[in-house]
Image 1 (cartoon, rainbow, N blue to C red):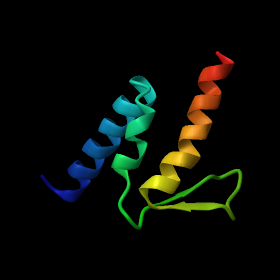
Image 2 (cartoon, rainbow, N blue to C red):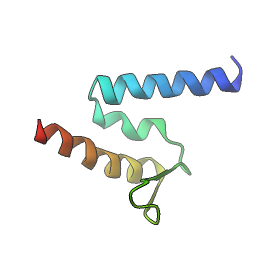
Image 3 (cartoon, rainbow, N blue to C red):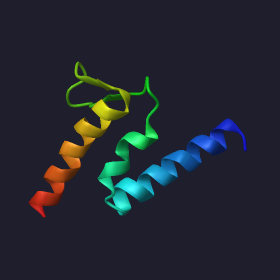
Amino acid sequence: MDQLAANKALVSQFWQEVYEGRNYARIGDFFAADGEYVDVAMPDSVARGPGAVAKRLGRHFIGIEREK
C-alpha cells in the first residue's frame, strides 16, 4: 500500500471509530507521539501528542453529545 492509500485508510478508520462509532476513547490512538492538533478557532492553542489531542478533541465531542 502506498503512503497516500495508507493515509486515506487511517483517516477513514478515524472517521468510523470516532465520528460514526462515537468511540472517543480511541482518539489518541490515531496520533503519533509528536502529532499535533490545531483548532482553527484557536490557532495559537496546539495540542501535542496522543494524550493532549485526545483530551482536547474529547471535550468537544462529549460537549456535542450532551447538547443532543
